[in-house]
Amino acid sequence: MRILVPIDGSAPSLRAVEYAIGLAGGRAGSEIILLNVQGPETLDVSDFTAVVTAQADRERAARQSKAALRKAVARCGQANARFTVRAEIGPVAETIADLTRRLEADQIVIGSRGLGALGRLFLGSVATKVARLVRVPVTLVK
Image (cartoon, rainbow, N blue to C red; front, side, top):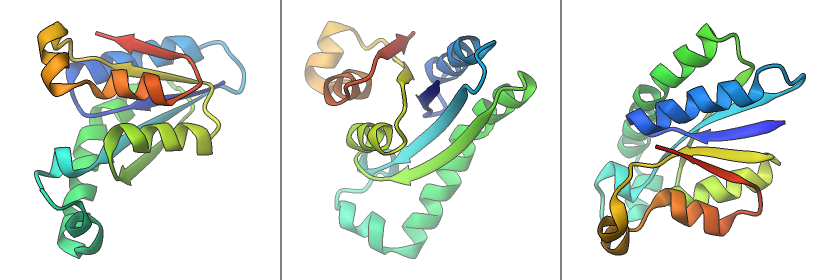
C-alpha cells in the first residue's frame, strides 16, 4: 500500500502523518510518501512563472519544503516506518493529484485545517479540492 501524505508543517498535517503510520503499520510493503508542494499560495508570489524560472525562488521553495517536512520525517523515522520524501513546485491541489496518479498511490491522508463552512466558501480547501481531483480514497484528519 502506498499512502501519500501532503505536508504543510501544520498540526493537522502532522496528525495525518501519525494516522498514515498507523495505517501502514503491520502491512508488509507499505510505504508512506511525504509530500510538500510549494506554489504561489505558499511562496506569496502573484506570478507563478517567476517561481519556476528564478533560481532564488526555487531555493526559497526548497528551504520552505525542508522546514515543513522536518517533523514529519522525524515522526516516520521514530516509528521505523518505510517512507520517501518529495518536494514539488506547482499549484498545490493539482500537484498533489498529479503525483497521486504518477506514483500510483493507493490512498491520500491529508490534514484539514477545519476552516468551517464559511471559510471553505470563500477560501476553498486544498483537501476538498484534492478529494475532487483524485480517484483514490482520501482520508481527512483534523
